[in-house]
Length: 312
Image (cartoon, rainbow, N blue to C red):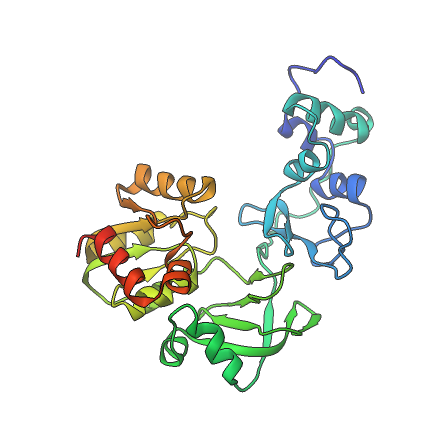
């Protein structure tokens, strides 16, 4: 690869000569949208857990369900070649795809195809057991709250047409428009999202004094047990959309965001503070989140911390 980087080289210029799918195939082999493959980002991925999907803007993106990592094609190339600067990365793709000799891709149709951003998730429910009750009880979440938030134990699930059997306690969040899978005892594919629905948003009261933006559905449910309305995006990397946030700000007197006391949690809080002016709070007892605090120190401690942080 040449040492000198072409200053005029850009993502747009590369994509005018080749396609995102061709770039994926150059670096990770035979792959296509909806086809589940073993992750090229992890060794020993015996159960295929990596796929491509079309984002809302039509970009061909990837998701590694085993780690939750998502991104675009140039993000993937960067992960595979972390020693390259951005300019060197563009130079490598340009040379590897032989872009100078590739023709412009013809426009075969003016018909707009609506991209599918996330896989279709189907579930097979099972009857709850005492193990399920104890699993959620450790975080202070009762069966009544699980039912209210439409959480069901499952025995198997499908990602598009791929079947996965649950060998450990596993659950489905019914978020009205999609399912999300939660497998608390698994290291890989622990969370599998079927969309971008805000967790708990549709169950919020019409009005209230306080609303908390949490970072997980589990924390949302414990806040409900403590009498505080809350909801959560699908991940800390995802912001609450402006339209939804405007509704929250008009319905509640005070709005907080509760992040983990780490880099991702701080970024999650900082973005919402800067954009919406909400009040950030973080655990002050050395634990990561409200459910961890409950599990480690008990109900009274977690409730007292919540009261202090929210000023109630």
